[in-house]
Image (cartoon, rainbow, N blue to C red; front, side, top):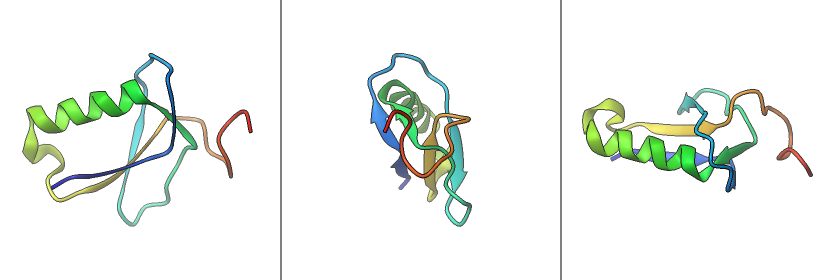
Length: 70
């Protein structure tokens, strides 16, 4: 089982993300739904890639206390 912990989602079509593992500080405040879908497809194609992982997913360079634009 793979757990995906997503930042605040938006509808931007671009795919660009960074992952953090459980225990690491979560980085980023936003993520596109397209990026989440891309990660899900990778997990489906190669199940062992992130097997038994809890992944944080966010767009690079969006660190902060709240999503950009708020």
